[in-house]
Amino acid sequence: MVRRFGTANRVATVSAAISTPPTNNIFASDNKKNPLNLEEPALVKLKAERDPEKLFHLFKANASNRLVVENRFAFEDTVSRLAGAGRFDYIEQLLEHQKALRQGQREGFIVRIITLYGKAGMTKHAINTFYDMHLYGCSRTVKSFNAALKVLTETRDLTAIESFLGEVPWKFGIKLDIFSVNIVIKAFCEMGISDKAYLVLLEMQEVGIRPDVVTYTTLISAFYKINRVEIGNGLWNLMVLRGCLPNLATFNVRIQYLVNRGRAWQANSLMGMMRYLRINPDEVTYNLVIKGFCRARYLEMAKRVYSALLDEGYKPNIKIYQTMIHYLCKAGEFDMAYSMCKDSMQKDWFPNVDTIYKLLEGMKKDGKVEKARFIVTLAQKRVPPFPPVQLGAMKSILSRS
Figure (cartoon, rainbow, N blue to C red):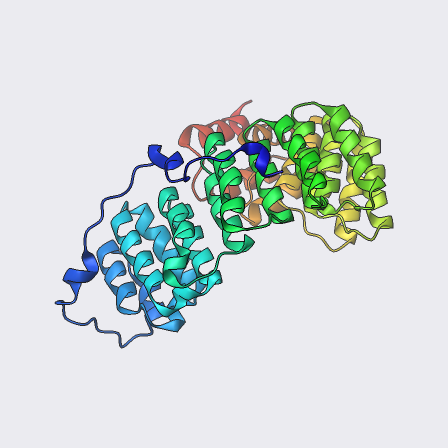
């Protein structure tokens, strides 16, 4: 599978288009500064600090503090905020310093460094970290390879991805696993080259890597989205034939396809099959089936599915509320629409303004002006607020003679 991409130059050249943030020798010059006052726990101070420079120096002062360094949230949050401030020089200084410390000998820690560079958009640094792992006394396995590959796929640079796949496994004796393949397939699907992703599926089996449910689900979803239904259905059948049972995500992908094709009853039957297989539907499943029945003008069935959702102990989310309120208003069932809209707004979930307009007009027509006014009162409490023009339109509906 890997060798078909051919060998190529080191992937650093692939990232030539990615600029390298400027680097200042901050650690060298910073030794002269007075030590920071750390009476408060370091994690508390890091979370509270908003100034990028102070944040950098505070993290640096705790470079060997395991409570800070081993705290994934603190590490990611610090890098994220420095990236948001455009201080890529600080990110480089922090992460390069961490690699040089004892923890840099652990592959798991280097994987985190690679991932953090990726999240900061510093792809070249991430890839170079992978190539330079031996300098820190750290062995490479498929885990660090997958971390670097995932960062690289975020660039959507096909040449870079194929170059990396063609060179690295052969150069370092790394054997790809199912996670490697799923990263590539997901990237190709998101890049709009689903046929190429399908070829990866065929080739992975030739080298003894068995597709899992994630592989199939990613491909089925991609082909359904581009209306290549015959391939999507074929992959579903192939998955089942090979003993790979669909999971919740796979069922939701197929139910979404059926709903989009106006096949609400089949979508509902598929949800029944999920229960038979002891796979519990989630809010996404229920919302899709409800929407399917609403679009097909089977509102009573939609209400039955909604009741089943409540009976299962689920609470409707904003999408389910929006779907039900919209179609109830469309059918002229304003009492039930009012109850749902009130419940939704009191949870700070607001339907779109067109749905609210429709509800207000229907309630006014039915002579239930006080209830309509209560909906407007709730709408006025929205954060962020509705634009004045939209609130004015709501009030004007109630003031019409």
